[in-house]
Length: 359
Image 1 (tube, rainbow, N blue to C red):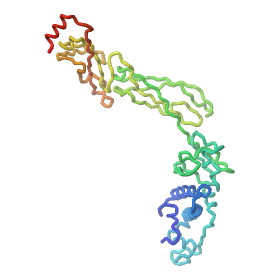
Image 2 (image 1 turned 45 degrees about the horizontal axis):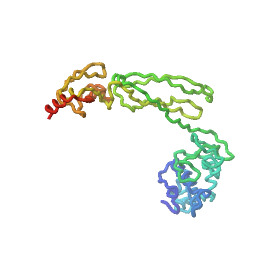
Image 3 (image 1 turned 90 degrees about the vertical axis):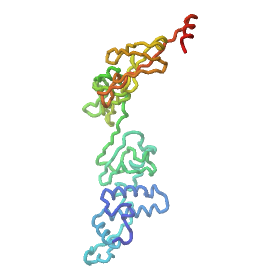
Image 4 (image 1 turned 90 degrees about the horizontal axis):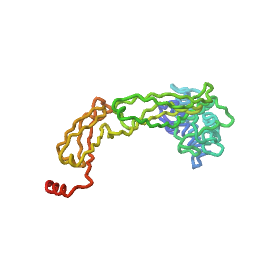
């Protein structure tokens, strides 16, 4: 039974709300309606209601009475609250009327806008770029860095910036939330023969490494082994997590290698296919020819061409390309394209013969 105010509705939580859910709800609403920041009409009264609701629901005994008898039960006015069966004899409670006291108990300071969380971006706040921090204060409820405070002035991207803490208080402990450096990218140039067979590439990097004192660094070389699988596509990324420079207040960057095809003197890569351009004369194009075509593994293929070869003609040979990256046992095609060489000039007799012969 609920009589008078509905404290669950005030905080916007269900009647089965956990302690953490109550804290999160109070934290958000108290910051939203704090009169130092919210100058709208009714904000101060709302701030007081929120504090009163939290005072009741965060106390197990008061919450039990409220759940049974509502607001009247807290004031000893509900039926059964004066010694009747199921009542709470000799219990009365009245809100002290000071929402700032509730706020101070919860946050550790009556005005957080002078402290860490709301000075981000203000002159002298120290809230510039850098890793976010999550401070925990003795006797105060810590801010949840995942809470959405994007609507509060004095914030950048909805989060507080690093600062020294609330005035007059010393943090019991400060957990610096480190930010990882941006990934460091390198190209890994690989020949088509290496893509065909697979290979291991050894890449030496130089990086700064923290000394045992945790503050100074030294330069150290490290060799990274990259196992290139047969058929890997150009653009494949190989990541070595946290192998970048080690610095005191950051997480080392990931080292990322991106596979790039080396130019090849004979073939051009098209996915899992290999493209070979055969140079032939106009006579061969018209009269036919037999080609000797190289393969990626060093063999020679005899390819007879009996039809007329046009500038856009292609000859495809299955299974002579590169391995498919997901099924290396399968291979792409060897695609033969043609570069037809035309004569620079013809004799009069040759022209007459061609004119009589060609349709």
